[in-house]
Image (cartoon, rainbow, N blue to C red; front, side, top):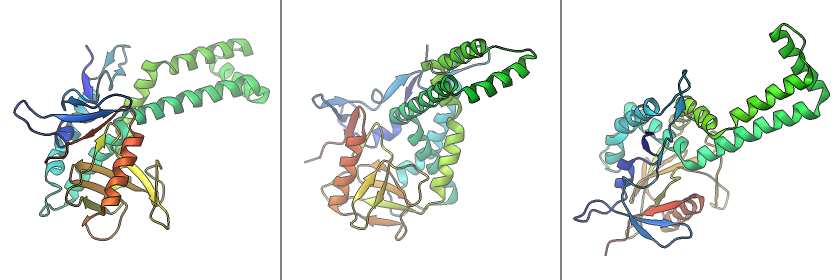
Length: 289
């Protein structure tokens, strides 16, 4: 049976949970549904999220799950202690958090949907070009004829390409490609984060950061200080946020003091953007009286 993978790590969700006698609880706000009580172990989980094909054609998710778990475990102390004013951001601590942060960005449902839509769009465009562009079609047919060592007709090549693309667009194959590229993307995106200056944001009294099933936020600010969200991680000037507790958030891409209290309006803006981008749930610790 496929592993129940947590797209949002349990240890991370526990940072936003209350601690009643019955165990940690989350107050979950799912779009279009009444608020409900959830638990870190049951939220943002999906069986087979890391499923990839083995050479023999079987499906396995244990290797990717173990790799992701190691990144989570290595960064756990950093996640817990980073909000402490005495915490020191050594190079090792930054690297561990950068990998954790980059993996977070990759493993959300939103990013997988982006990967799926991009893959299907790319394959669809190539097939449409083959069918509509005679010059391109001729070059492709000639190429495969050379590989086969004999002349192939347009119909034979077209049929083969159509079957191949249909196979590549199947959910299991799209998932496989997503999983096999995870490590490369984490290495790439963690490098981008490490090249940015980091700052710890704290909330004013009486306010809290929310988190969600899509907790990594990217945005630019204009000359009026207004937020423009949803930009690529590598875009020049992009600021990247990850709330790490109800009272702390790491920001990459901002120079200045390493630790600062942000305005109440900024907390509300971050929470609103987080909630609007969340596909399924927004998780928020209930305000304590």
